[in-house]
Length: 300
Image (tube, rainbow, N blue to C red; front, side, top):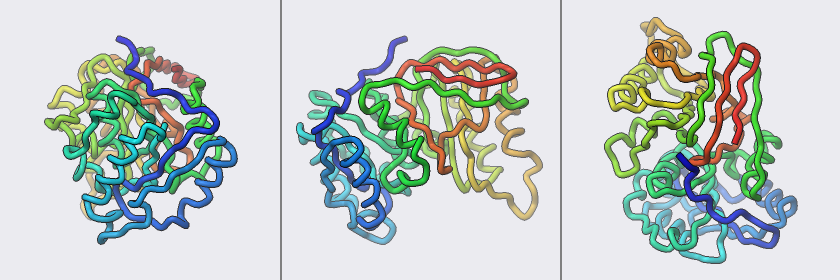
């Protein structure tokens, strides 16, 4: 198994675009990120019409978000597209996006959370993308932004974190795929459905009830998404909720229960997700996950 197609890497003087694929935000919210990109990276930032647009919670009506993204996809001068933030909305427009020009002149698509929809669609088409901080979250952790910059400019970085007792030790090699856990479950059966066989899957989420984590694990398991993995990376599951009547298992116990029969390596609390520290992951790239009793490493 080889890596998916990597779009051309950035170089100084390139143009990148920021659009809002999902929930609304004000331009002021991302000005520090724009300044960082232009001054530190030496690229020009183009702001899409969806940034600052509003329709209830969305960054404008579907047609505005679709038109903006399509414009940047088709513009040969734009070498990367950032989603300004996540929230909700990408799945509402995914089937209307025309990727014809993108396939001829691919570019990096960057984001996380709701943008998992786009990542999965691109992987289904055979292209890499970057699960990474978005302009709205740039200023939370500088190192996380540096990991994004590293991959965008064609360099590689290896990750290493201390191991946890609940990890399952081992070594796995394969394409790395994944993203927001709820979105991955939501996409099952669609054209953007993620193929996981032989791959390293990473998952993360926020503000979910424990019983719903259990339900989604069962859904992925019944759909065959967990059986033939090369490895499982469990990122941050932030602000989990409990019903008035406790579910009876912790988050860690839920994941462990539904993967107990499998022999691939599993690591918990990898710094990817909705916390301040959110390391970039090149979806569709080959990776090696090694988990032992002292440390977990992820090499690209």
